[in-house]
Image (cartoon, rainbow, N blue to C red):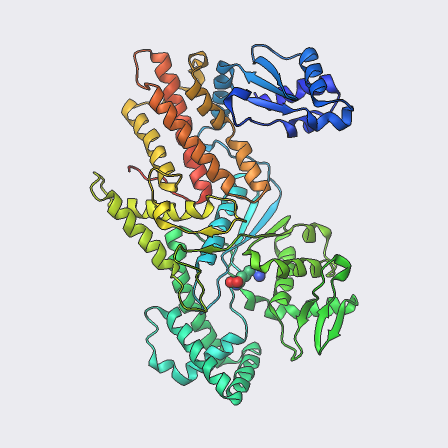
Length: 567
Ligand code: ARG
């Protein structure tokens, strides 16, 4: 039973407006005093040429709706507020849950559609910074969400493994490689090499020239250069893997920028053939004014070398052919907004089916910094992400130190990592964020550990009862108190919450929901004695506890957060 649907149907009959349109406007009021569902009549004022109040009164007078389901309708300032009968809420939600049980919330709405989620994409031989952590966490969650909704989902890591900086590193390595022990903190050492060779380049033009030649050699597949490049890549990946392992993330493809280096000529040829390439100071560019973008997109530099954007275009072509995608999401910081605008605009000139060019989307996110001040790898005051994750684990361990738990290391890891993930997903991704580890680890705040804790509580209630009641034999009429009804309403919204987070590519919709759900369970738990004399009532309350456990667990899973055994 979908209450929105029932209400929308009834309104549609009175107004002769499509149910689907009405359904879109129906809201869940923030204040309980405004009923369970609310319909803002001003939405129809234009269409019906009447004032919202008139519309509301008219609907109320003429609506035909089952009184066993909708117990009351109020008109307040042009809003129609609907009150759902409490036992019906329980009955409907339990019935909905019973269809799926442990898979509650899952769907096959994405069947037959392919979604690529490109995320993380750090740069080889450069530090993995806290901005990369953010794309990694958001991207992984989106990956989980699409998968859960039945899309064929593919996670791509577009490694930054290409460019003149690798030639510089090779030149640096040739000169001073012997001085370093790359078996520990290799990225730091490569970064140091990079600084040194840059210094030398700025002092000595001939070294810069050598670097350029080396880059050419690298591009042409020179054996020595390729071997070193592979070594830098391996050393970096070892470091990145430590982070991915801590976060529990694997990618379906690790094809980085270099993978596309032999696929760029085709792009240049197509653009040339389509008359889209123009010369500008020796470089080849595509003008995008007709698409409302003032800055032309550079495709080839004056010296003939390719650039970042060209590799992105080659990647689009490759992905269209390889995956036949319906959507290709780029989880990348907002500072690359112009880049993606340009690339997506040029992609329209490649002769690709519109399905592909319409499916490209930059899922951007705001700036992130630690409380101490802005972190920048250039200024050198950055924090290593691996250290940050390990610190979260150590701090968690301190918090749980005196608890009676078998595997404290495992728990500390689950809590610490869960806290970091949740903190990154707690607010709308476009917001700028100050990443506060201390806040993230507050067990009583709106945090990952708080939700984990509530989930563990549902588990221990069930363990204490030693049984999960039969969902088909729950007496819903027993459940009519405020706290239970409130909890059931949240439980009933799970699937639509996941869908809207998918539609907006916004995992924070789920994290927000989980906080509300966990709080609703907390009130339910405080106000109701779950194990009680009345067996029917006990069964009903236990079953709601079980539903909450499943929903919290599945929800946390979508964010990439594990549920501890005990806490
Ligand atoms: N490697 C880039 C960086 O760290 C991000 C790559 C984003 N993805 C892309 N297809 N351009 O800034």
